[in-house]
Length: 173
Length: 173
DNA sequence: GTCTATACCAGGATAGAC
DNA sequence: GTCTATCCTGGTATAGAC
Image 1 (tube, chains in turn blue, brown, red, purple):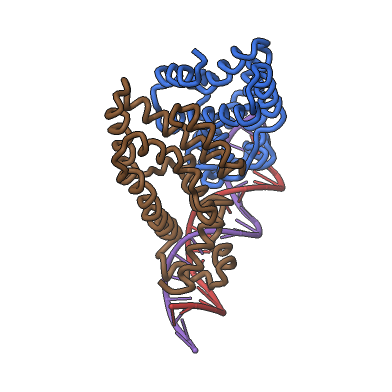
Image 2 (tube, rainbow over the protein chains, first blue to last red; image 1 turned 180 degrees about the vertical axis):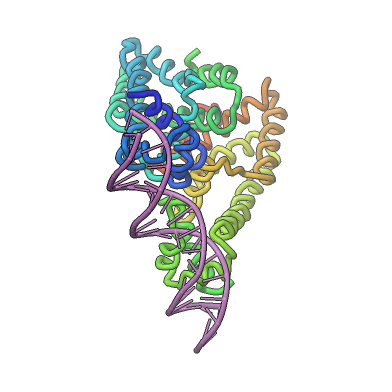
């Protein structure tokens, strides 16, 4: 992966996140990346290929986060870690996550394999803790994660006090 | 507002919601609406104008929902009603709300006036109930609303049992 | 109010030189 | 690996007839 290749990737991520996939021209990407337009196609075949590269890049990143949750054996701690997930987003990755959510809404793009394992591990945790309806509780966690992500990524809410509140309300602290 | 005008509006809403604003051609809208392409521009000036018309149409709709919450004087009941809001979405309006969320992520499009009043009325409710940090509590409600909306609109989750769980967990029931 | 025909430009993509 | 030049489709928008 050359310097310019990475430039293209980063420029595309930024523009896709702010203007959307269809709203971003390859010309705009080239300019932002300080690169000729043709080079984009040499490296990524076409615009769709560029998007795929970005998604792959981010998938690897996110499975690391998920793994950190799944590997915790204590069920209570695992759940807490899951809730804390959106709060531990590296601000440098904000662009990427914005894009992921935008894609979900725009094109129904889905988080695949690693996300399923994550969900399963939460159901298992609630099960171990003797909750009546582990699936429903897990859905609740997803609700919170999506809601918090919206708040942080879209409204730049101060995250720290929110995490406290949620853990308290969730009787996890 | 003529029949064809309404056809255009509905077709555009449907396509914008599924393919995104930039991903939808005026040609596709015309076909879906059973109308000539030129007519779109006669009625709405341009594609952007069509989007604005849709947003206005939905703003009026949403301020009705918000008003239902704001007008409740009992603070506890007001909060419950607010939480129940995303659960009472008319399935016929799913397309519209999907579009609203997609726009939020794509273009940072905002919920304006009526939404601010909604937020204020929740802060007031928590204040009346003697909560320590009404702003933070209100943000929590927003988190839940956004999370639930994501769940319902994007993942077609069964809503009813989820509402129960939330109200219980929130010590509101 | 509505359709047909058409102008015009922007966007994605390719070829070939360096 | 990278740039320049260029092709061509398809998308927005307008004009004018009915």
